[in-house]
Image (spheres, helix red, strand yellow):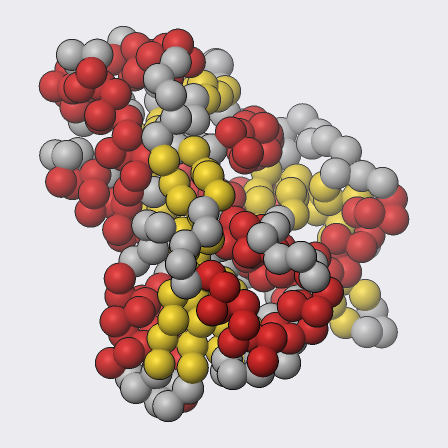
Length: 353
């Protein structure tokens, strides 16, 4: 039986990585970027930098890894600016944003439990009254972040450091739409509202919008979206959404789609203290992933985790916290959850429930 085919439309910058994630999860992939990330410097950027350097900012919020990159790319003395940021309370939305910040030497003091602007407002609103809050993000950021913090009594400054646009029409995009119309695709992943709008704008130009809508509502197609805003945009276009990922990462979305095609998958939980240990072990062994499996056999079987380059036959692939896990299928079939934690004396420990 052939692997299911998933359609993705991630920006060119993330396309190769996204294809790898899907393939590692057991999918064939058809890909065509439907959004493009462009640098932007608005009239508020210089004031933002001046306030941070002068110590007049209390909280700085980055909503994406792109926001960090496009902020630092416009600053001559990065080291001075990063030192100033580290004197503020710097907040990141999502693990990818935190990882990008930490890679640049930025200390992140808080990441909301759910990776959305709404959740961040709820988490920090009680503590922002009278404080100066800086937000560096895209030109399409949710209004609730600014409005919610202002309603909580904060003085909010927003600078748009990059913009999201529709790429120039090309054959790759048209081929993806044609594959959808011909019902060759088993699943499609939407990661933003703009991605939805750009897909349908192109379909309208091609004269196939109604046909595409019908194809996307086929019972044989799984439609997946990151977060409620993207899901609601799909509803506006009269599409039924099968999966809405509550975790705002591409890996989490693909994990949810993967479960749709293999209902026996367990949940995988990696405690924070284990994440860096696993990444260090992968780097030390010069491998690309880790495998969790049963070893020993006989009277003394035990669970092991070991760096690997690829999955073995039958392994189930997960992506968590920027790490690829290959898990022996027997473990997945006979457990409801797999938990990995780190103990100073005993190392990495695996627990099944």
